[in-house]
Amino acid sequence: MIHVPLSRSFYKQNLHTLATRLLGSLFVRILDNGRRLSAHIVEVEVYAQKDDPSAHSYNGQTPRNEVMFGASGHLYVYFTYGMHFCCNVVTGEIGKGDAILIRALEPVEGIEDMLIHRYGAMTSDSQKISNVTNGPAKLCQAFRIGRLENGIDLCQNKIWIEAGNEIPENMIGQSTRIGINQGKDLPWRYFIKDNSWVSKPGKGIKYFG
DNA sequence: CGTGAGATTTCCT
DNA sequence: GGAAATCTCACGT
Image 1 (cartoon, rainbow, N blue to C red):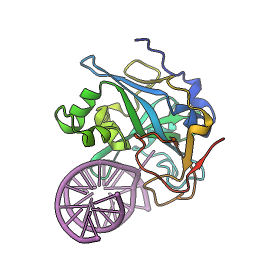
Image 2: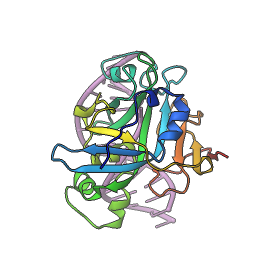
Image 3: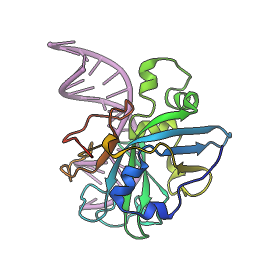
Image 4: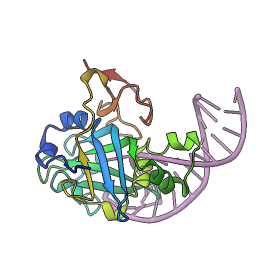
């Protein structure tokens, strides 16, 4: 397999343009045992330091969110609700504090490993399969992303994102974000229309084109 | 199928 | 001390 991660400069483009371009891209991880996991990104949310009270970076840098303020193209992994990890792509220039949350993936390679990571054993239960990566904490569990992966460089060869399917504008949906109490009305969630791996319907859905 | 509560820990006020 | 960018299970329809 060819390994061509998206470049550092790719992660510095306009935040919302970048979010739509990540849709259809391939999220890849090589595990320590050499197994390869990959999945298309089908749902993301934008979090901007400036004027976005729901962003972890909104109130400035802390030990928890310091990766968000670092160089773009790194993975910001946070722990929440006492048991879950979620991961973001850091964007923009150093010090900016912007990131894009990866909310759902469509498995391509290594779904057997993802099922084992999620449920402790291989399964052919269709309910479990459809729930393997359709949420931000679920996909982290499926890809074994936790504390150790916080701050990892996506321009290296452990975890990266590479070009995948080009998604035409008229297949991109936009809505408000999920699970937040501030910035509720900002339409900063983007997803692939009619894709069954998208986590939830969302509110205020509009389509491009 | 929809709703609701519990799990469980870190971080910041 | 309380909220948190969530998930799962139980229970009612």
